[in-house]
Image (cartoon, rainbow, N blue to C red; front, top):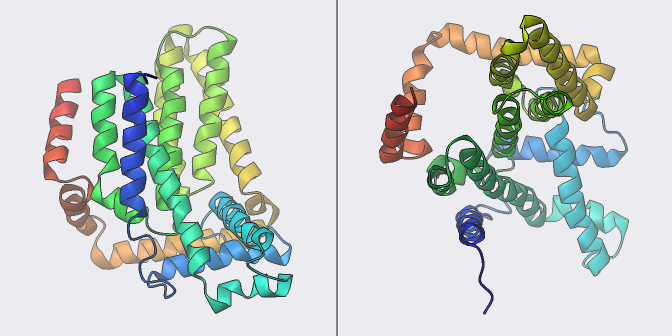
Length: 309
């Protein structure tokens, strides 16, 4: 009888549970789509089929749109290859005739991203603390109500969360251990690039610059502040290069990008001015306590954070 390692068995069970929870009800509402963000995001991704990769709108960076376009394009290619559609013209009408399959394909990308995040959280926990802590964290995320819910949408958030955790994993390679020449410098390049991938998915991922910078300080301050500054620059260049590689038209069409980014900022600032800068804090705390991962797990997390301090 073949015996699987315990770690592998746990990973398989976690991934299976994560996928099952996120796949149940994936077709809710279809062919009607009740989340307006899904329509806007899917329409933007499918617009690349016109022959240009310029989204002509930069309320979001473009990497997720490219991935979504390729993902849904693979589904449409499978329809064509299987003979389910008989012509290119018929293929083009699929979205307008019955978009169910297209939205199921798009939502399945979020399912895969959500399940992958569970695996990445476990890897991060094992690297940072230990196996038991890692498994507990992965279990909590696998069943987290907010993460499960948002994995049913064609939206950036779960995909961006996956990339944020992947970036944390890359950043941990910089911080853990003593600097050792090229190996550590290559870890800085990798971490900077990983942060750039996340930033190219959602602008708010720019805040990854904080843990990346702090990890570099911790890893290199024993070599002097010159070494710290040099590696901060290396990380910044790697991050920026990756960002523009994956969202190239932000650089190639800067006026449109600036218009959309500032318009988005004005919406956020106006909302903050109207309601008060800190008024939403209480609502966010309620969401974290009640919806994100449930009160008992939040409580355990607070205890763990205090213990680490």
